[in-house]
Amino acid sequence: VKRVAASCVWLASKLEESPRKAKQVLVVFHRMECRRENLPVEHLDFLSKRYSELKNDLIRTERHLLKEMGFVCHVEHPHKFISNYLATLGTDELRQEAWNLANDSLRTTLCVRFKSEVVACGVIYAAARRFQIPLPENPPWWLVFDADQNGIEEVCRVLAHVYTLPKAQYIPVCK
Image 1 (cartoon, rainbow, N blue to C red):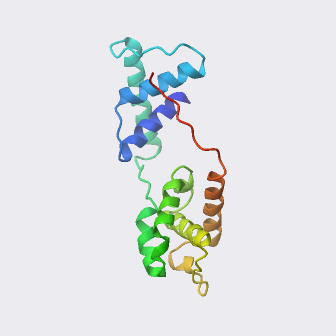
Image 2 (image 1 turned 60 degrees about the vertical axis):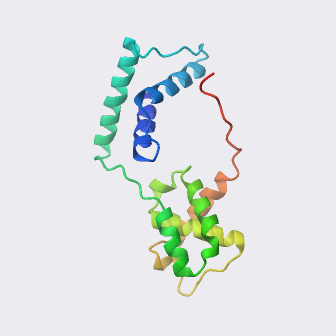
């Protein structure tokens, strides 16, 4: 599990805007493992055989992940739909709130559970509810954007749950 988690983080960093070197990922996961096992945090020697094995294992596991995913690892973000949908609805005043909610949705599994169009509609709906701005109901506005009401409600439920969680605390990795 630890090996797959490290490989997933490394692969995800490559796919988004902040690629990391294998060394950086291995250092963080090594320190996390030391802390989890209540061991003294020791430095990972980059010239050691252990580091070489960990790096090769990381690369091998990444290849397995890519193979299992059929090398399809692109996730479409809901952000690209928000501006167009709001312009169509004539509710540009919701843009910043919907954008913020879309950012927060990336801390959940919504982007892999629903199409981006559904997540975009969900964050627009949540923003409209927050600012008490009515959206067209006849015909239902979400049908125009290829979304369904159940999906939108689930997006809102998941986001509402995220905001009930305690605020994340920073844990220094390096001393």
